[in-house]
Image 1 (tube, rainbow, N blue to C red):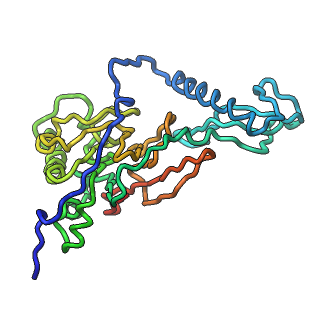
Image 2: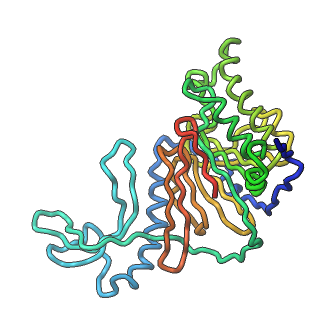
Length: 327
């Protein structure tokens, strides 16, 4: 029987830049109880963009307000569409249509803002390199399987398989953990002092997570993002998890605690994504857009009207599926 050691495989390297300063909250304080200003700011920005696109779309039609509609006259209106659901998901669009005698607006065509401009960046390397995405580890949850995660760690770090398998693992240059890494009772996150037994229940999932992340950080760079079940602020942008939660892995310069959304570049490839919550505005189009903590894995390539190309990736919950995504 042949035995292959990790030293036989030289791990590939990549150039990394983070753009999370765009999501970092410095001294901003929001004291209002309503979020109408946020929605109004988004509407104003998207409406201005859609107005600039209308001449190329329907140059023969005028843009009207809802109050300026005339029955039977075709025109374009721009506004926010809400879907009748609990969290009221919405999108800002331009609609081509006309008012009916019943006072409704009959829609004939729809214009979305589309993808933002995409910066063309030459690839720094033509050799095969991989990024691993995983989300929903949910350590501390009753259904969490420690062996499953350990197998993933062993695979990423090159401690599984024969020489060929270890060679593929050596091409993994980065790991992104897209939120919901631990499962802690919300009762323990109420800002009150915890009893000793509750302190143990709160800290144990992080101890277990830190042990695994330390193994990874000793071998390759990793980014960890907060999610809805992690101890971070609830609304986006979520700020990075405190490094004191990771006394072992945080000692490595390969360990990075990141924001949610998280934006970074690897060898001139731009990545942007969230831990499952949505992001409302993009100033530059990424090459890869990922969303964590989804029910199942899905991916597709989206093309923009101006030649933009974005790879969309749904990262499944690891705790439920045992799946990670390699890009």
